[in-house]
Length: 139
Image (cartoon, rainbow, N blue to C red; front, side, top):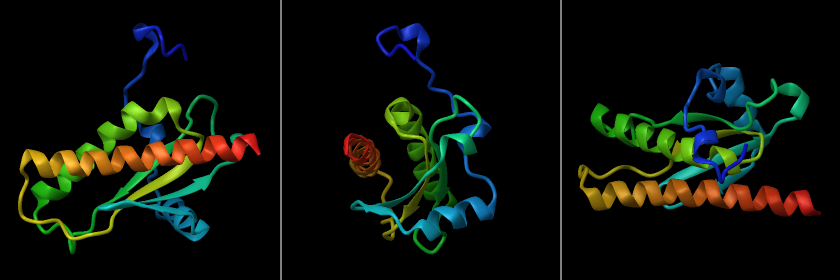
């Protein structure tokens, strides 16, 4: 993909870039690889290139427990922010299966500052994962 040409950028979020089955989530959790942020934990599992169809790259699953975000509005907002961050970061991510899990209770506020903090935490975790994969690829 030519990132310098805006016509070639793909910010879609098709079904093939999502984790669906409970077994897929369990595999990622069983790998016990995690990056911790202020609000979220990013669990990851390196996937063999032969295990995925060509061109898919990273896949993500989202876990936002009702225990931590009581209102559906909050849970939906958190998932929407995560999907948006993943869409934008997807081109720089390694072909890993990811699970982004809310790790801390959400306050009742949905103010802009809070939303920006959540998004920044997600962006930071995805960036750290891309950097980690680059370093491991160089070794």
